[in-house]
Amino acid sequence: MARNGYNGPAPKRPEERRRRNKDGVEVQVAPKHYRNVAQARDGLDETWHPIAQQLWNAFGESPQAFYFEPSDWAQLRYVIEAAHASLTRYEDRISVDSLTSVIQALEDFLTTEATRRRVRVVVDPGPVEWPAPLDHWCDIAAEWFLSLRESGQAAFYQATDVAFAVYVAEAMDRHLNAGVHMSGRMLSVVIKACSLLLTTEASRRIAQMELTKVESRDIDAEITALMEKYANAI
Image (cartoon, rainbow, N blue to C red):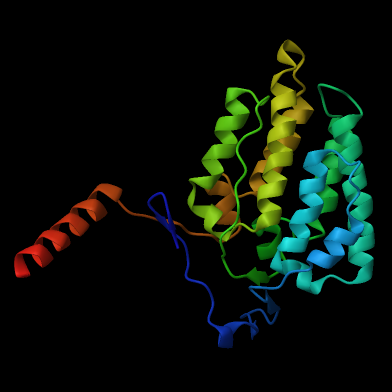
């Protein structure tokens, strides 16, 4: 799958869905079309902050939830409640300690591609819905969020990656709005969250993701030449 001039590794064939790595660690592959919408619907608290609701619902739409047991869902509900609290405790900021704890807790639920790769759970790439940036986000946060959709690693995102990105962009916006009172600790936490979304070449290399760049202009030229050749042959 290509996005904005990038090619990612091809999805695994069905017969490759369970294999052994050279170090003997088994790789698990979640069914591509698995959904647990019923579980997500039953556990949704409509009093949660909209971003927390989006996070919760995203797990019902993401294939990695195939591996969830009742204990996963019960603990995830606790984590989403904490995410809700982090978003509503203050009107214009997020506690750095709360943000750190929520991000660390969400990693246990295979929320991002970086975490899935680290624990060797493979999810076939699939289309995901991207919401528009929230109206109140500053330009930097909105631009960062939009850049994810146009970057090659987004080919591997699931609904949870996108919902997590919304949560991170909200934290980024509130951090930037602090102005001269911006916290260095908060910057570190937000950057850590960005790395879980594979936003930099360093984080992609650590996750063993290689994106091959191609020149869009060359592709366009080849397509144009091919169409002209076809037209002349008619």
